[in-house]
Image (cartoon, rainbow, N blue to C red; front, side, top):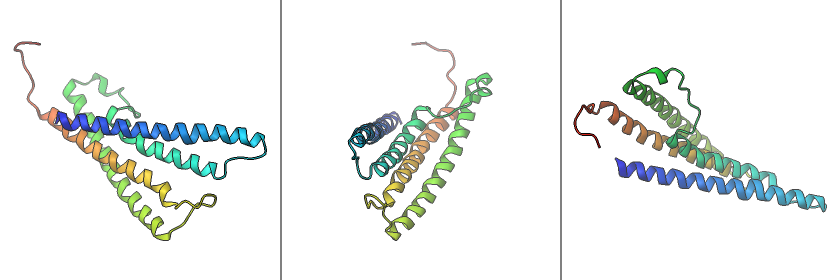
Length: 170
């Protein structure tokens, strides 16, 4: 299980890094260049579409990492007073609910994305298939569901593992 956890950490970290690069290149760099060019009466055609698309890629690629590292919104006011196993049970319940939600979301996004792809609609400025606005959301939800499945298996194993008692300490 440790090898799988290590792999999931590396993959989600790499995807989040790619999402960060999308933000840096498209949202920051292109927007700054566009602003400067507008001062000279020009601009970057389709800049809004590129910035919007890069934001979707950033969110889709960073979401699995947020789940894996626990960097999403969490409420711990109640669970901080529970014993370790009780806290882990609540964490596991939350992971199972998130897994169900992400699985349903990825399925519905996939169905809608395939409808959009079948229509062949394109964006107004650059003529990009609008399906590419849906693709990062489909991937983000699907990879998040896989990450959550690994987390559920990991934490279920921890919950049912026998307690360590006494013995030599390292």
